[in-house]
Image (tube, rainbow, N blue to C red; front, side, top):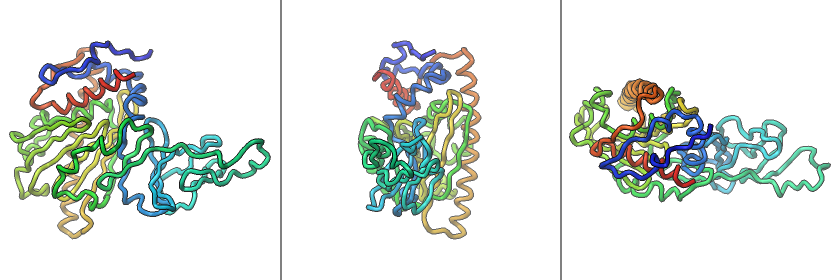
Length: 357
């Protein structure tokens, strides 16, 4: 049945008296299906690093809101995005990411497209009446680059610069574009994508779920700042002698499902991809300085090992929360204004997305 939320659930809520989203938003399959058009079609998705699309013909394949997409660097140096769907009979133009393609060739029947999306050749179509290759073009996808990261959107509701406004000014001393992509780790988790985002958006749980991380952060100084479309959690790093280094830990959430973890000398990005009402995938991309010596290799090993341990702790609690959301025991609890303002922003943006229909 179609998900029809109680209108009272969608009303704006001031932070000081706010409650969390009701449980059906996390458990109803149709609610998750509707979020494709309400949240993910107009939203911006972090796809890759600009380093992966540096030269003509370099291309990256992905999927946004169920639509296969392909980003490609053109012969003219422009970065473009298209639906990875041939206009003939829906074949794929690329199975996987790659380098230096001269054309985009459908893997089904061999129709070929220029790197700007124009159909160049359609074998044996000369007998088709009123068929003109000049009238066939791959549907475009909006693409933008920020700090060396490539974002894409099927139908953006706002400019990428508006979405990210104010973040770059806070990154003084962090040259994200100079960092080099290292690797991706992906985790498939049996919880709703919003359960995982909720968990990311507050440090309230850190002393209880992440004992080792809690030793690195100064929980007493842990703060959350919110903007129109993103939030920042930050904390000084307490022990400069550890592999995290000295300075601040900056944890940015960008609507609707992107995280930027900015730490001294490195960046970790997360994208949370809905798969079903009770399943999501989290893609972790790691970026480090270009130089690699023995000390840097050891720091990276520790960084990855530590991240895996924190991720396991987060996964375990998200699984437990998803089970209890589906139990019928819970509807919506009060938020902690001091510690959950980031969760509040996320839920208010979700409520807005549901109201706008």
